[in-house]
Image (cartoon, rainbow, N blue to C red):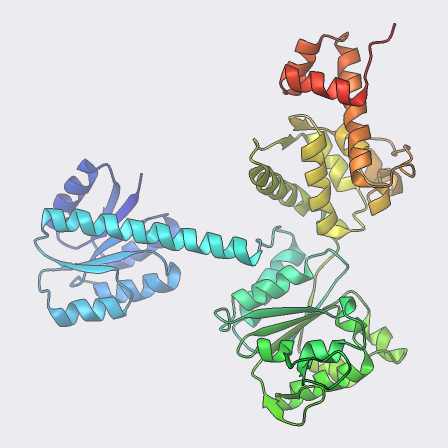
Amino acid sequence: MAKLLIIDDERAIRSTLREILEYENYDVEDIDNGIDGLEMIKKGNFDLVLCDIKMNKMDGMEVLEQAQIIKPDLPFIMISGHGTVETAIEASKKGAFDFISKPPDLNRLLITVRNGLDRGTLVTETKVLKRKASKTREILGESESISKIKETIERVAPTDARVLITGANGSGKELVARWLHEKSNRADSSLIEVNCAAIPSELIESELFGHEKGSFTSAVKQRIGKFELANGGTLFLDEIGDMSLSAQAKVLRALQEHKITRVGGEKEIEVNVRVLAATNKDLLKEIEEGNFRMDLYHRLNVINIHVPHLTERIDDIPVIAQNFLESICSDYGMPVKKINDAGMAALQALPWTGNVRELHNMIERLIILSDKVITENDVRAFANPGGGTNIGAASSTQIAAAGGSALTSSFDSFSNFQDYKDHAEREFIKFKLEKNNWNVSKTADEIDIQRSHLYSKIEKFGLKRAE
């Protein structure tokens, strides 16, 4: 049910509008002044507002302007007994969805409200789709370090200041960069990403600055580099610590002069690019060892954002894990599974050498291989020492907190994840069948699969009842 707010200082108008809209099954609240109306907008979750223009205490246009700052996507329908074309145009310019005159025509009112709600829904859906397309997830967690990162992003994003993002692999440096771009004034332009560690040193300059046809053996045509592609937008240089010294010199020049030259070219090309950089290395140590330029370091490190290791914020693991559970189960088109308290404690006890990325993979593995409720035993059974997740590597205090003992199974015999998955699935089904004295029907109900599916699994794994 859509929730509407009426702001009007005339009791009769408020009562009439409320009666009409509630008859149409809308959830309606009303208030007689703009100041209190803004407070209700801040605290409430309204889908549309009908606001009078001429009011005491605060003018309706001012209410509209303030509301646009608080909730820019909230549709506003302005109403007035002194409506003119000029007033309607002014309201539209300030962000109003539509304008209607008093006394409102019933059909016109209902159509306008319906259209305003449809528009609000479309705006919300569009933002969700854009977020999915851009792969920009929320930065999850309420720990002090994450709250500080969010606050820094809010302050720094609207500027053009260069940002150096540091942290271990998988900690979420790329996500921070994406949010810096999304909340910047360049959000409508491109975010171009370059993984400096994934590009051979002899090709990095061509990748960044482009090249002219014939500039080297394989340059069969002209190529536009990442700096040009990011013109007007943001360039994210991931793993900047792995960039060659010659490329570093050219990047420094581009940052200083806002100009680049393609490999094999002579023409200087002006670029307007905001540069964000990330690294898992200690750049000061790299400078001491002669692997990184100090002048480039200072150019990039205007603002520093350090993303903490997941083990430094274990209180955030439950909310992150729950988010992954919901999103992964949604992608698979299956009911959302749950993790019990002991299972969550076991997750928090792991060393997480792969950070948040490893947690995501772990949750996906648990969803695939575990029953409806993910338990401590599931976490211990499906941890992956080869990827760094090994309860045995945790401290005795952590293991006690998880309520489990060290994982002792060896995984050396498995060449890939599918082999391990088949092995785990086979052992799980065998255990359940033996527990239920090979009652296939009861076992199928317990592990929540169809009986025919369970028979197929028994045949696939060659399971037989012990004589």
